[in-house]
Amino acid sequence: MTRIQTAVKPFLDTIEVLENEPMSLHTTFRIGGPARYFIHLTPDTPLPELLDALHGTGERVTILGRGSNLLVRDEGIPGVVVCILGRSRVRVEGTRVSAQSGAALAQVAAAALANGLAGAEFAAGIPGSVGGAVFMNAGAYDGSMSDIVTESQYALPDGTVGTLRGAEHGFAYRESAYKLAPARVILSAELELRQGDPVEIRAKMDDLAARRRDKQPLEFPSAGSTFKRPTGYFAGKLIEDCGLKGFSVGGAQVSEKHAGFLINRGGATADDMRRLIEEVQARVLSAFGVALECEVQFL
Image 1: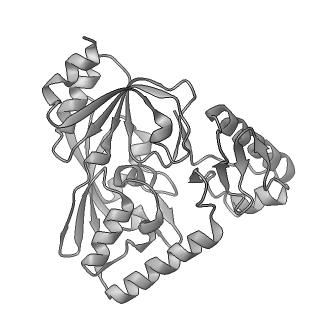
Image 2: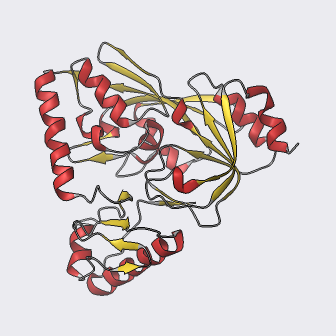
C-alpha cells in the first residue's frame, strides 16, 4: 500500500480515489496527462483533515476545481490531485449566499436568481468554481468576484482553518491574496448580493449569455480568455492586428471568431498550446511592444 493510499484510508466513506486519471477529462482545454492519484470529494468530506493527512505523506498535492483556467502538461501530475467539485453546497439567507468552494459559478447565479438576488449575473457564464473564481478574482463584462465576496474560509496544509474578510482578500484585476499565498486552500465563500427583480435579473443573464455565444468560440475547448487585458489595450485586438486569427501550432489554434481565445481544434497537446501561447506573446511584443500576460495557469 502506498503512502497516499494509507493516508486516505480514514476518509474513504466521503471520497473516491482514482489512479492514473487523465487530466484531459477535467480541464476545459481537454488537455493533460494522467494524475497519479485523483480524489473526488463530497459535500461532507472533512477537507482540512484530508489535506493534513495528504501533506503528511510528503507527496505533491494539487487542488483542482473545474479546470477552466489550467493547462496541464502532457506528462501529467505526480502525487495526488484533489478535485473540490463535490463540495458544492450553496445556501441563501436573505441577501447572503454561502457557497462551498466546489460550487459552480452558474449554480451560484441560479440560486441568486431563484431568490430574487442581483449582483451575480456576470458569473452565470463563467465555467469555473467558486474557489477558483475567488483565487483569481474572476470576472466578466461588468462584474467580478471582488464586487460580491465579503468573506472566505481556507485551510492550510496542516489542516489549520482561517478566514479572510473584506479588504484582506487583496483583490485586484485577476489577483487575490490567495494567489500570492497558494498554500491556502479555499473552503467556502460568503457573497453579499442585493434584492432585485427576477425578471430583470433573468433578462440580464440572457443578454450576457447571448453576447458570449455571439463573440466567443464556445463550440471548441478553451480556457476562456487566454491573456490578461493589458493596460490601455485589448489582447484580442492586438493578436488580431498581428494577423494571427486562425494561426495554429499542431491542434492548438488562435480562434478565428475571437483572437483572445486560444482553442483546442482537436488533439492539441499541452506542448502545442504552450508553443502557441509563446508565439502569440512574441509576435505581439515585437509588433506593439506589449507583453501579454497569461491568465492560464500552467501545471
